[in-house]
Length: 200
Ligand SMILES: [Zn+2]
Image (cartoon, rainbow, N blue to C red; front, side, top):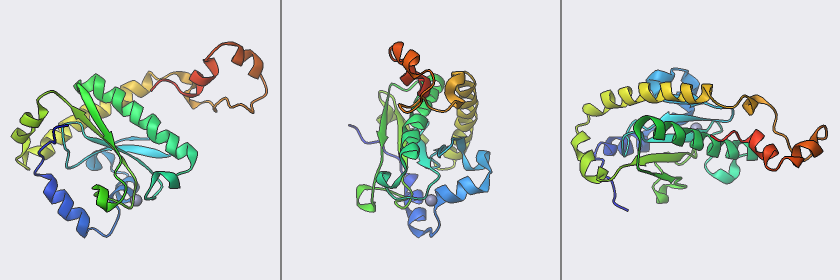
């Protein structure tokens, strides 16, 4: 894999090492989503743009819970990280058409985690040749405007995708202990599973 050159991230690395507070918890508490580049709030977690992106459309998915590792999350919260990741992938594909993605979670400072106390998953869109292209954006003053334009586009696309999500999304998951209608639903192969995972 070619490594993206993103010199503006140096400011980020220096800032986060000084910061005593958790920026994920702070930003989600503030309720200024446009300012904080929060794209979507889910039930257990949220999607936010990276202020110091490795590439255009670099998003992060994080739980509301301030925990430092995946295994500390309750199952429903861990599952929603994946659901929100899928939603984000769908939005990014539709809006900015990447040719691929890097997805990843860094656990612990030694792994490269900038904010090690609050687990988060990175979604970095990739295009052929982007390792050559991105240095053009290396002027730090260009980045915020670029980010804001991307934020507006992605936010609109999140709303569009969510508006077209299957209506069964809000219903309780049909689990193995559900009694009424269980046999008839199970009779239709795969229907039960799809109802609780609406193909994000
Ligand atoms: Zn936190």
